[in-house]
Structure formats: structure tokens, C-alpha cells
Length: 356
Image (cartoon, rainbow, N blue to C red; front, top):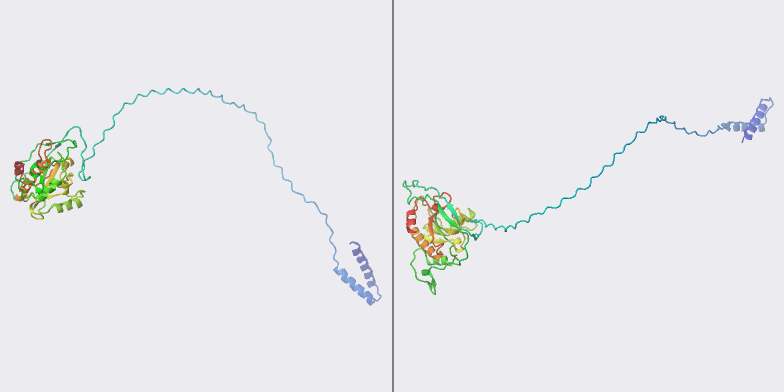
């Protein structure tokens, strides 16, 4: 590669010497001269090759290391092993005293709720209990007509009622002796004007238990008209009484039913407790009879009083005696635990006490 440039350089020198000569140049030489000049212009000097130096990697600078200073070793003291105390012996179980045999709890008697059940059953009781009912003071205020209330003064001493619970089953009470059914209807007996044959038959059909009923409680409706159907609708839909009409019997005054007409409520035919007084116990042993009328303003009619007399006398025969006594007749305000003026200030209390 180096011999070619040297040859060319020498050839150029010879040509330059020839040109400098005064002799004439032939065409052949002129052609060679032109070729030479062209070749000399196209030739570039080759750069000198530089020596290749190996790449030097930079050395990491050494980090300054602190001079280690020896320190004296401290003695390590280990804690002395704790001596574990021996396990405490468990105390011997104490001998539990033998539990005393407790008698089984006595079943509590169900509460007496007047309107919560169709048939109210009294709980059995071994001992007789007494219930003292305190009566309100008698009301003797003036009537609308300006006169004093008729009838005797009410008793101020409390009435004692014995609660004996449910007694042993004694069966059903028999029909009245003079009212037994024969082959062709009812037998002999006193004639009744207001206690019709159908009413007596309905009273007889009821399954009356011996000794169940002890009282007859007389009321007034405090309205001048009405009958058993109207009062039953009011008690069931307005007063929300499940069993409807609160009384066992209703005696009309000639407005919505006949004067002295006796109507029998479902509480008598089903033989369930009434809802006419504030004591659940009295509701269970007391037959409720309601007059249609407001006896704070009016008087009961003669037909109503005659019907009441016939009805009570027949009921006394029908239910029989309870603890050796016949049915006792009381006005509502004479036996109700809460103050009330029922059956009204103009009701003939003296007549009722004298008759019954």
C-alpha cells in the first residue's frame, strides 16, 4: 500500500521537471500529463494511524476508615436463676351440705279476667278467703224534679264476700219442681205474665251448675230507649267486649222492645261470666239484669218491676241454693267496688229490699 504513493510522487516529480523544460510537449505526453494531474487531485493523503490506548477504568476511591479503638470489655453479669416455689397443694373440696328437698312450687291460679276468655274457670282453693268490698257513700242529692232520692239510705258498712274458688264438681242444677217438662210441654206451676214459655224454656236449657250463682245485680241502661241487640252491639264494637252484651238479661220499657219484655243474652245461654261490675269475681258469681231506662230522670214502669219479680223468683228456683242461701239481690251501686249511681237515684230501692 505504501509503494503506490511513492511511485506516484516520483512520477509527478519527473513530469514537473519535464514541464519546466522549454521543450515542446507532445500530445501523448500532454495526455499523460493530464491523467497524472487528475490522479493527483483524486489522491488524498491517508491519516496517520494513532496508537490505540487501552481503556483505563477509574479506580474507586478508598473510603476513609476510622481507626478502631479497642475498648475494654465490660463483664456481663447474668441474673441468678430464680428458685421456682413448689406448687401449692389444692385445698380439698369442702363437703357440700345436702340440699334440702324443696317442695314443688304450687301452681299459681290463673287471673280472673272478665272479657279475656269465653268461659271463665275459677282456680281450686283449699281455704276460703274473704273479699271486703267498700261501698261509696250514699248519694242523696236532689233529682231533676227537685225532690230527694227515693229509697232507704245505703248501708255504710262494707259487704264481706267469701271467695272459695272452684268447689268440687256438683253436677248441674235440676229444673224447678213445679216447672218440669212433660210429654206435652211444661207441667203445672204458677202463671206468668212476662216470663213467657219461650223465655222459661231458654232459661231451662242453659247448663247451670250447682252453687255457681250467688247474686242478682240490678242495673239501668242510663238511656231512655234500647234493647238487648242495641246494647250488645255497643258493648262489642265500642266497648270492645269480646263476649258482647255485658248483662245476662234485659227488661224493656216499651221503646225498642215491649214494656216488661224479658230478653235473654248469650252470657246466660252459654253460662259465662258477666261484664257488668268492676269486680271480676263478682262478674263470675253475679247474674246481671238491666232495665232499659234512665232512673236519674224517670221511674221504672210497673211492667218492668213485675217482670223483674217474676224473673228473680224463677231464677232462684232454677239455680238452687249456694252455701245454703238463695240468690241475693243487690243494686249495682250497693255492691260495686267503684262509686256509681246505677241504677239511678229514682230507682225504688225500698221496694226491691222488701220484695227480695
